[in-house]
Image (tube, rainbow, N blue to C red):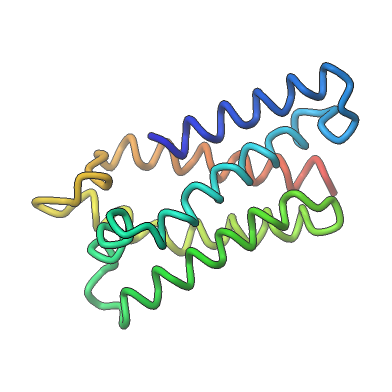
Length: 148
């Protein structure tokens, strides 16, 4: 739920600044890019914060090798994507790469939702998790389409 709140509040806050005259944030797509960047900073940092890191490692499907390494790699990619969203010249590529990353990582969310005893931070039911994922993907699509 924290990523969703971060996306929504980050986007709304950025758009409010745009309405107050900050030219960089003068449209919803630009504001959504800021909200997505904030969300991916939050989730990227979680890949390295000890309590959440353990939970993220626990939801990597067992068929995948080196869960800790995969969590580290995806955390770095999320942080790089967040930075890319803030730079107009890289915004579209960053949003597209993050969209692909979200799609690739979604099976871990499905696996977590189906675990008998999922880690506390990963206990969201699959329908809610899927709806949130569609919102995140939609936000990335808005940034890509509106910026091209």
